[in-house]
Image 1 (cartoon, rainbow, N blue to C red):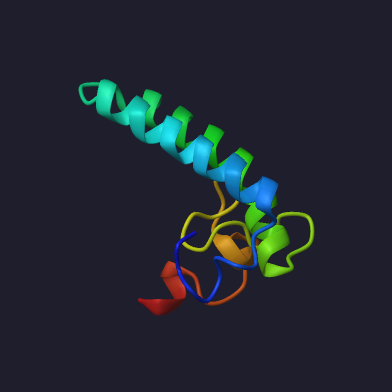
Image 2 (tube, rainbow, N blue to C red):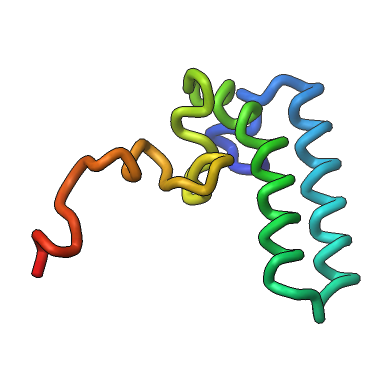
Amino acid sequence: MTDPQVKDKFAADDKTKLETAVDAAIAWLEKNQEGLKEEYEHKQKELEEFANPIMSRLYGGAGGAGGMPGFGDAAGGAAGGADQGDGPTIEEVD
């Protein structure tokens, strides 16, 4: 959100909402450093479900097709449709 190439592309209310959600997630992480893996995954999913629509609007995506770069979609799949069978499988690479 501070990257000069994209920071001006956020709608003001989206930027404020996203900053608030990220700050809350960071505060939760700081308070729950001894949490279970499932708790972290749940918190990550919550943040992704909130942030993905905003990031999709920013990057011009439709229907959450891209999601946040590097995070995959809210359903836990890979970004860019990699979970749709595109590209080689592990068996094909071996």
